[in-house]
Image (cartoon, rainbow, N blue to C red; front, side):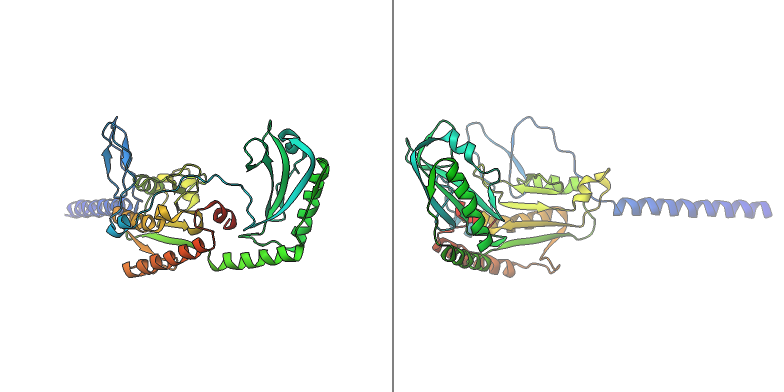
Length: 358
């Protein structure tokens, strides 16, 4: 009788232990971060679409840009601009000092005389020459000849306005460069230029906008591979920093339209598949991207598409859910900002705006 009782207790204990082990394994699987799915093997090139699907590109067909679900976006779409071809310096945002020369100089000589650093304090310093053949201002090029030069320093950027100390450093650097070529620079009055810098800096501070959405996991966390796979389906590519991806501009060489980032430590972990990510950030640097790219529409559509695909929720930086009317309000305010920048000849995405808001 005692032996039977012991056997029964042992069996019951075994069942309990098995149940505990099974529950532990189930809980572990349930709490494990979602993993990327194996991609189907296909020899045909696939074009990314904003809805997360892929489709074959028929032979001879033109490449289609990612599609949007907002009908108003299609109605207001504008042509994507071509890369600008204009001087690097502009009196709108630069102090420019003309340098008269006794005789024309070669591009090689100009390059040899340039200062070792291209900054004055926290501001970019630049030199341009008027090409004798094209009659266009350009950065010095070996093998070309120039009859006139000019040196410049930027009036303001995101570090602040040009100050008196930086202006004095600019004068010293430009004078030394001119002396090396036998040139005579003519400098604008310091007080006026510093005042221009402060006014420009104030305008930039009042009209700078960097938007951010946060995508938070509703239940199960995500692995880095899972996030990267879903973002790649919407056209994102790896950035230079671990844990960052970007949506490239339609014009090569221009800043990305959107950024997507998550914990860099998770991306660098020895076993990234076991790294649990519970939030991802979408960002838009408004002055850096041309409004013709419809960056906010794409940001909004991307956030919604990722939330649907990854079982997430779109929130602001404080964790508050972003509703449709809130996003509509942001879009309306952005249009006013774009108009203001256009009126100041500092259109979002232009070369001048990219320099000023950097």
